[in-house]
Length: 162
Image (cartoon, rainbow, N blue to C red; front, side, top):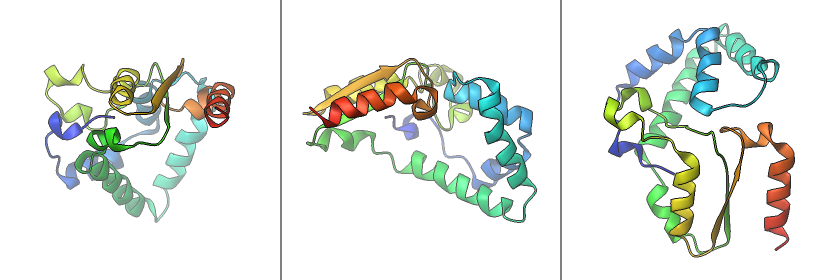
């Protein structure tokens, strides 16, 4: 939805690896709530934290961190936001009103950080530039499929049967 290259400077791979490797379970849980605007109760979030903590104890963790950082670079360095207007097929964006996801926000200038990650507004703007796009917003954060499964299913079913 957003071209982060406009607000986030290049971040060295080593910085991202070090940051991700040092993240504690408590810090990761807080990050899930703050970065993704989650509305899930804590008992539904803790399994994600526990999985990550188990991963940290495995021999595969360094490889996982490298994959995570590569994913960050793909999002940052290969944005698709500008190409969405080229999609001519019917398109439905289903986004959470509380979603404030913005990879790299901590590295952006303070004056840019507040304007990043307004996903519902970004989806509306992207849809307006497309010939056949609609936006459904649900009262959730980033994980719409977990936070409002029924709402997601209704939206998808209505879209597919129109």
